[in-house]
Image 1: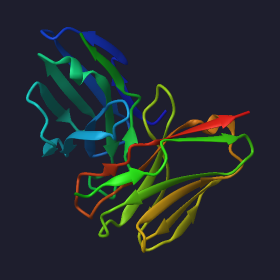
Image 2 (image 1 turned 90 degrees about the horizontal axis):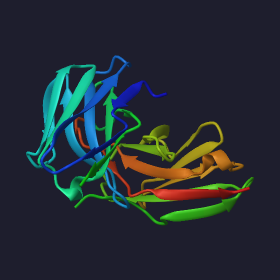
Image 3 (image 1 turned 60 degrees about the horizontal axis):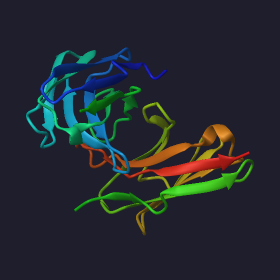
Image 4 (image 1 turned 90 degrees about the vertical axis):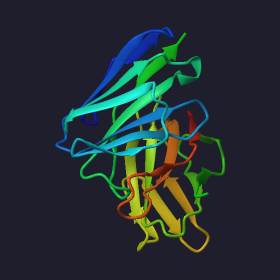
Length: 114
Length: 113
């Protein structure tokens, strides 16, 4: 276990549904991240939060909406998704944020959009 | 643009052999590099890292080599075991202060018993 948990592990949703992904870290870290992992593509950084403030939004469509209520919890709210949004969504945390920080990943949520 | 890439998408080895996974990067200002292992159904796990002021770092059965001249990174796994079968990613930590690490596409390591 890495100290980062994600729920649900699997999610199937229609294009008109609204759902949320949850991430929780038990490592006392100050930065949290959302990544998208599609088959045969590099990990794509979506959002970065440092001390509960969003510090990076990597040109992600507005149908993805992050929320970071405190340094231990991170949510990704989903609405009116498209089939091409089907992927593994990974959450990670790191001590302080920044490109030289080691990130610890959760197991991911496998999302399928019908 | 800046990129991190992997030379081979799949590497097959016999149990007990040594494995070498390669990675190229293009940002000469990068000063931190990480290798991650991702097993099926799990998120990436940190294996080993190296900073640009070093050219070699060893862990338990793993060694990372950094050649800044040709901007090349490699991960060596000694006495490869079936449990080493996974996808391995290199990541460029980027410049200090940057929040955006850059990940390679990944190499799938298959270990045959």
